[in-house]
Length: 161
Image 1 (tube, rainbow, N blue to C red):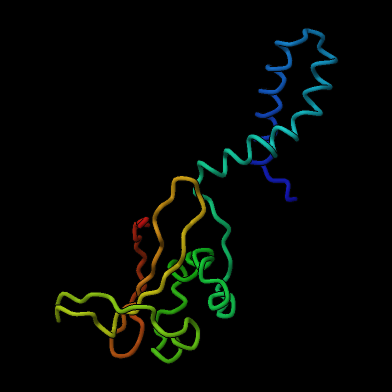
Image 2: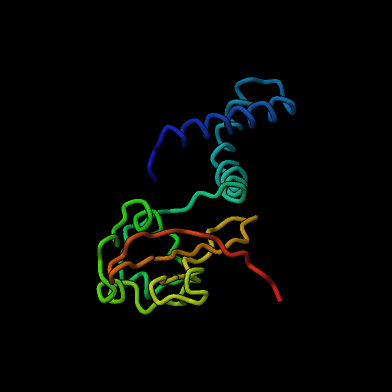
């Protein structure tokens, strides 16, 4: 476990809340302190942290790895930051992209030709975890002269049949 300032602040917050709750049961300060000290990690890891994960959209980030991309398509969103913000595919040709990401899952729509364009490659990134997330992340690589010109991200809504 990595001790970070956010973790310490969260633990202090949980301790104060537990202290206030236990203080309503018994007014002896030493007993309240001991019970709060013992209950704080339990309340943090079994109540506070799960609720925080439900309502936040935080997800772990990983460096791009072609093997992980192929093996775990549902976890591709973990590599999205490096693909989009670091522009690791800008300037690569179609063969290089196909070797790293595999064959395009579908072609994007091009209004100029009123059809799906073989210069707009799309890949599904999976669903980010979260209780209220029904949006599927996708990326689109736009090619110009057989080289990646831009990489964009968009979301598709999950539909249930």
